[in-house]
Structure formats: C-alpha cells, structure tokens
Amino acid sequence: MSQSYSLFVKRDIDGFFGLFIDNLVQFLAILALCSNPFICGMNGENSFYLFRYIFPGAAVSILFGNLFYAWQARRLAARENRNDVTALPYGINTPSMLVYIFFVMAPVYARTQSVEAAWKMGLIACFGSGVIEFVCSFFAEFIRKHTPRAALLSTLAGIAIGFIAMTFTLQIFHKPLIAMVPLGLILIALFSKSRFPLGLPGGLLAVLAGTTVAWGLTVIVPHLESPPIWITNSVMDPAAVTTQFESLSWYPPVFIGQELWILLQDWKQWVGYLSVIVPMGLFNVIGSLQNIESAQAGGDRYATAPSMMVNGIGTMLAALFGSCFPTTIYIGHPGWKALGSRAGYSTINGIVITIICFSGMIGLASSIIPIEAGVAIVLWIGVIITAQAFQATENHHAPAVAIGLFPAIAAWGATIMYGSFFAAGGKSLQELLVENANADVNGFLVGSLISMERGYIFTCMILAAISACLIDRKFFIAGIWSFIAAVFTFSGLMHSFQLSENNVDYLMPFAESAEGAYLFSAYGIGIGYVGITIVCWASGAFLQKNGSSDDVI
Image (tube, rainbow, N blue to C red; front, side, top):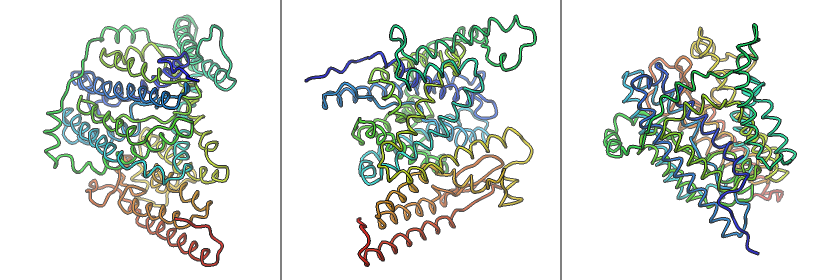
C-alpha cells in the first residue's frame, strides 16, 4: 500500500522551533563575539562585515543545506514507501565557530588591528573546512562501515550531556520564571506523548508561554517595590525592540569568490593556521559520520557520500558569500524524529533563517523572544541522543558506550575551567602550570583535563571502539584502533597543547608555537597508545594460538 509523504506535517512546527532556536543561538553568539572590540572589532562602523557578509553568507549555506536534506528525505521516503522519514538537521557548526573566532580571527585582529584581515582569515578557515569534508566524503562510507556503532554514538552522547543538555539545563534554572513552564509543556508533550487542545504543538506552546511570561513580568516589575533579582533578571528590554526595529534593512548576499581566490594564492599568510583548520576539518568529518550513523540507528538510512558532500559544499558556499563559519549536519536527528518532524521542519528553518539574515532581523528576534522560552526543546534533543547511544547498540557494548563519554565530559569541564580563569582574572592557567605541572583544581589535574580536551572527539570514538572490539574479542582490530590513536597523538591532533595565559591551542610538529607559551607534548601518551597496541596484538596472538580466541580482522 502506497504511503504519502507530505511536504509539511503539524509536528514539523516543533522541529522547526528546536532547529531555529539552535541556529539563532549560534547567530547571537557570532554577533556578540565578533562585535566585541577586544576579539574581532566588528562593532560600530565595522558591523557591516557581520550584516553585509557574514550573516547573508551563512544564510546561503543554511538554505542550500536545509533544502537538500529535505529533498533527500523525500527521496528516501519514496524509495522505501514510508511516511515517517525525518530530514537530517543542519546549521552553523558551533565548535568550529568558536574555534575559528578565538584561534584564527582574534589572533589576526590582535596582531594587525585590522577587522578586514581577521574576516579574510576566517574566510580561509571556513573554505578549508569545506574542502576537507568534501574530499573526505568519497571514502567516508568505508570509515563508517569499519567503526563500531558504540564508538560513533557514544561520542555524540558525551557531547549531548555536556554541551547540549547541561548547557541548556543551566539556562533553564538561571531564569526559571521564563523557562520552567515551557520545560513542563515540553516534558508533557514528549515524554507522555500527550496532545494539547486543538492539536497545538508542544514546541509552539512552550515558546508562546515563555515569551508571554517574560513580557508579562516586564509590565509588572516596574510597579513592584524592591523586587528580588530572581524576578528582575527575567524582564525584557522594550527599548531594545525599538532600536533593533529601526536598524532593519536589506542585505542580499554578495559573491566574493574572486577575492577568496586571491587570498588562497597568498599561502604564506594562512599556512600557519593549518594547525587549526586541519583538526577542525577532520573533526567535522567525524562528527558528520557520527550524525549519519545516529540517523541510521533511528531508522533513516542516508547515503554517506552525498550527505557529507553537500555538507562540504554548503560550507564552501558560506565562504564564497562572505561567512567565516562552517555549517554541518547537526547532532540530534533522533530527537527531531521523536518530535514527529519530517522534511518540512528543515525547509521552514532554511527559509526563515534566510529571511532573518537578509533583513538584519537577528537582533530584533532576540529582543522579542527570550532564548530561555525554547531551550527545553533543545534539552530534549540532548536527552534523546544520550538515551539512543545505549538503546541503539547491543547490550553487551554498553560499557564501550560508557567509556566513550568520559573525554567529552572532560572537554566540557575544561571549557568551564577556561572561562572561569578568564572571567576571574588574576593568575592564568599558564602561570598555574608553569609553577606546578601537577596543579589541580578541586582534585582535578589541570594539565590532564586540558590534554583530554584536545581532540576529544577522536579520543571518545577511539576509546569506545577499542572497548567494543575487545568485548567482541577482536584483539587485532582493537590494536589497530589504538595504533591510530598513537598516530593522531604524535601528529598533534590529540592531547598535545600550547597554552598562552588562558588561551589553549593545538601543538603540532609542523607549526610554530606561540612565543612564551606553555607547551605540553603528548609523546608519552602516544607511546602509551603504542603499548596498548602491542598488548592487544600479543594477547590476541596468545589466545588464538591456544584456541581460545574468536579474533577476526
């Protein structure tokens, strides 16, 4: 019996709000960081770099990707005669965005005091990331087929726990008056599978409820005598709405391919930043593989090569139209599928983001809708990802999933630590480690925490893969994974770092280190991985010789 697949279903509204808010958060972060006069200087008269190039360029890539992944979902639905296919979520790549701002654009701006130079180096980094993903798409399926599912999903679960669920949980409890009623509505809609009157989507109700409460408090609070801070920190700013409304204009995308080609030819200006571009490009490849695997575990099997190829093309388009920030297949497909979203949520998100970026409405949207009103939807996504890591793998691989969580959780802790030292001032992380390489914070070794954070996506996956192979008594393959970890460690992709005050960067053999930086070379860890390789292979050979191993290659 033929099953129709609609262009749009009601539950696409829930998915749209989740994906839109996630993308909106990225744009607000870009706006705040790039306009900071001490980071990139895109404020005042230099703000046109954001509104004329970066936001419209990002919109081009997001629209392109969202429309493709919606079309891809329709093709899969037609091929398999299903009406429950969910499109891959897509948007700004958060880790790359932060890394490129702090480790590419900000250093260039600090050295040259040129906003244009910082923007151009960001374009190079973005384009390079897209090229890496496009090239890797041709052999990514091989990597996916030979990587245990536990290794792919546990990494996502670790990221979901720290960087999604924990981050947004903190926002909810920071402004409970705005966020907790929407949280309740989301939990009712998604955990109990209950339907609201008139069939209204839970995501829409949550955003409306949070926004209504926020603006209600804005009206009431001025009439209260000495209200406590837990009330006053939830009010909105009406003046900001007026200011943002007056700043609306039309910002069509501008093709800058010729300028980018000239930049690429001057390779001496950007070759030093390969230590940032290459690791982040490879991280994006692995992240895309993990997210495609996550979608398959949820029931939607998408071809790896075209999915990643379009991802790479989308990032290159972003650079060609002036954006410094890669786009990517988002973590969280199972969450959007559990919401009941199909392909429409992707299409709507692409269109709405494009309108907002082309019109300069990002600031206006943020002044009207409190982010806390919709973060419960994103929290749900993190919960589903974490649950799927255990549910979609074989029961006996659960320990492998668990061990893969630890590096990502360590990375989250390290991120908090960096920010704490930066905000507190006084002694820096660099000074702390120079004085005492064994320094700890509340019992946690500072150097080890930073080392674990460097390349944590690789570390999560490799530790889980080794564990899964050993559970299956595949000693030789486990040794191969450990050897890969050793190669990545010796090359600087994992564990090594250089620290300048509170700024952490990669330490790679072919790149110059920052003058006066604290350097940690992870050769000892690399030798340790070689030791694990030898132990795995020796154990496999011994057990196989004695007829007690099922080891296979």
